[in-house]
Length: 150
Image (cartoon, rainbow, N blue to C red; front, side, top):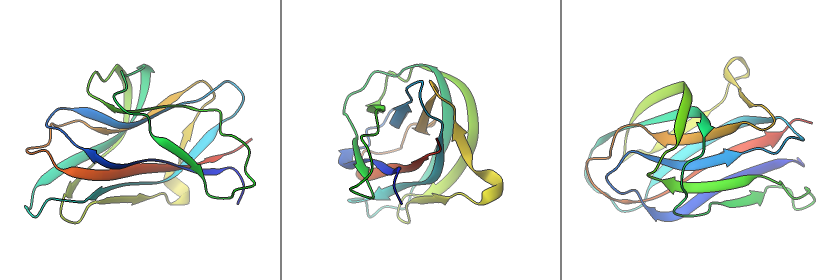
């Protein structure tokens, strides 16, 4: 399907601070829908409880990395998004939409049901965020799959 993108980080260090893993800032032209999000453990063999949240932001974080934005259909147009990653200078969170605990050994996987789809309005900023500092630093991959609506 055209207009579906995986905004992702591969093999990054989680650190031990509160961090926005992936931050997506939209241009004025389109509204987007979040259809999936994930955090995958790559190195830890220790059972730890982490928390992930989805947030709307009114002030940008400071990026340490730049996530990759991959179109799932190569015929999709350029996404035109501003992408930031691993922001420990988080910016301003205006709203927490969801917050879920997970065990790092299993990872975090969220797939939207029709009743709970998250819409990112034009000029909005959305983040996959760790609101609690991880107890230890590990290597993770993470991402948000989004779809352009118009």
